[in-house]
Each structure stands twice: as C-alpha cells, then as structure tokens.
Amino acid sequence: MVAVLLRGRQWKQRNVYAGCKVIANRCKGWRGVAQVLTKDSVTVSVDAVVYYRVSNATISVANVENAHHSTRLLAQTTLRNIMGTRPLHEILSDRDLISSTMQVTLDEATDAWGIKVERVEIKDVRLPVQLQRAMAAEAEAAREARAKVIAAEGEQKASRALREASEVIGDSPAALQLRYLQTLNTISAEKNSTIVFPLPIDLLTYFMKAKEASDLNKMA
Image (cartoon, rainbow, N blue to C red; front, side, top):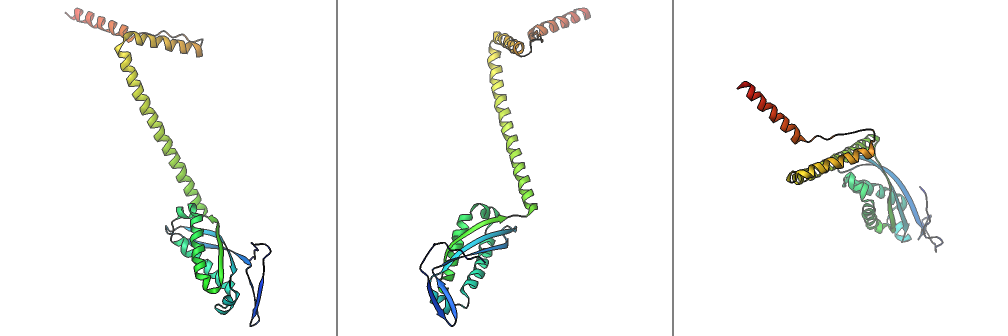
C-alpha cells in the first residue's frame, strides 16, 4: 500500500482517540489488481487506483474500526461488481465512465466513515493471451472481408463503365478503329519491340460467310 500526497503541503489536523492517531485532509492512494468476470463471461485482469482522504477524523475513528482497510476492501468489491455488469467492449472503450461510476459509488458508501474518495482511475485491463490472439484473428478477418467487398464494388463499377463504353462504340463503327489506334499507341510507348496488327472482327466475319457460301455451292 503506497501513500500518495496529492495536494502538496496542507494543513494537518491530528486527533488522538483511544491511542489511535488519525491524520485528516491528507490524500492516500491504493492500487489493486483483480481478476474480474465480465458480463459476457470473459476473465480479465483489471488494475485500478483509488485516491481518498479522511475528511472527518472524528467519524473515521468513531464509526468504523479501520477506515483505511475498510475503504480498500470496499474498493475491491466495488471494482468487481461494476466490471461484472459490463461486457468486454465497454470495459475497453469506456474506462472514463466506469471510473466516474466507481468514484461516485465509493464516495457515497464511505461518506459515513468520514472518507472522501477523490479519484478513481482504471490503469490497465489485461486480457488472456488466447483471447488476444482470437481478437487479432477476428480483426484481420474483418479487414480482409472489407477489402474483398471494396474490390467487388470496384469490379461492379468497372463493368458498368465498360458496358456503357461498348454501347457508345457500338453506335459508331469508326470509334472501334480509333480505339485500336489508341491501343497501338499505348503498346508502342511501353514495349517498342512488340508490333501488333489489329484485325477487325468484321473482316473475319466476311471470310466466314464467304466460306459458308462456297460450301453450300459445292453441296448443290
């Protein structure tokens, strides 16, 4: 247990009752590590710090046997109770809200003991190694799934653009020849040793029709 002086040099009121010396208005810090079972049945190790002080020395001596020890025990119980009512994703993302809730709960419970809880901080939440690996694998799978969806959407948009381009080229036969020339220009700029002669499909269709006509004449 480490005593931490947060407020610097302060006025200290010393009271002696039944041989017990109590120092008021001096803040003390308590750090605890607890194994907590979350709402979604995940075991985590929570490291928390509670800063408190004796606000009323008379009450802290008269109403409770050991105010400091009782405050620490109550802090441990409150930590387990609050963490047990929240799922893992809330514990990892809403530390400030959990700290504020725990501070209010402790302050209300220890007010009758003459204890003022100044601050509660969740320092660290440690997960089991197996759970860390599972969460990493889940995140990686989610990223891969998003990448595949984005690639599929790109292919869909590209296919629509190609369909629109084919409709435009189909309306003008000269546009297809201009596209051939543009492709030749692109290939010649990148690979100078390659020579490509585009052959229009209409020309092949003409030869195929002529061959069919000649075959029919032979059969007749």
